[in-house]
Length: 348
Image 1 (spheres, rainbow, N blue to C red):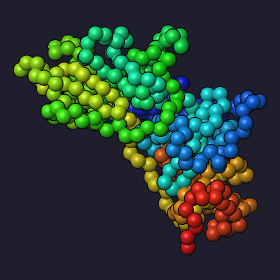
Image 2: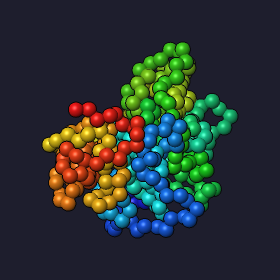
Image 3: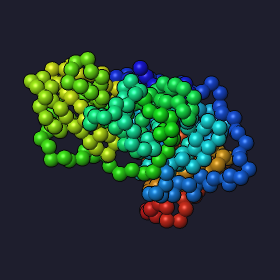
Image 4: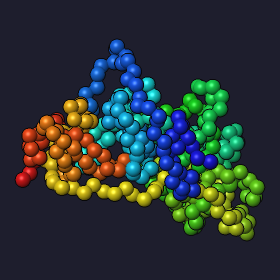
């Protein structure tokens, strides 16, 4: 069962790579709301530790509205970005990498949902009450949207969380958002209890019996807290970190469940640099187009002369090799547009 939103299948099930299909036609520019000031894409790239974040699964992107889609060539793991603008079903996001900052347009279907409050999860869509046995996703946890039912905002959405544990179930639409505040680490919370090792895919169930519903599967975590030994087959266990709280039952005799994984295909070929570009070099969406980013630090790039004072400049990104335009009379005199103090100074 692979999630799809707006026709884009962005995460793979069971480690299988699923290719994203670009939209059939470039997006049309939608009239901007008259009371919304225009966005300065360069100023919006300045790092802000307090800015609202979104998490995007790499898929087709646009460097500017009206342009053809650029197919994703990188891995499918979520990328933390900052939303800065929107047009119709497209969201403009600021991407801040160690070597470059730039903005791209993405389809909303590529944006993970963010829990706005702690939410108890039940595989059948009816949360259990009156018991400590539970699976809870905490506020700020990011999830994939799966099937939807009912009419928003009273409807509900099946979601899948992929992390130390894998949790799948139904949540009210009202607890899902496209963005949230920046978050710290989601490391495991120590409890002082005795722990025991489990294998990936170990099933945490709602009751100590084989047919009981699944609360969670062990993902990247490798140990659980022992709450008490129930009998020779079953152990009552717990797990807690910054994203999840789980209390259920595990049996060492239970076969592992089926885990899902972020799409991780073979990495695309890296850029073969042929020169260096100075810190602050301006990145344009195309020759003659708008400035949408800049380099951070002196960087090796693939640079090709395309005439009339314009250059093709290619760098590695989470979407694979991505080509921008640069401007300057020569390869050693490229225009800069980074705000003062935004990048390290140019060094010989």
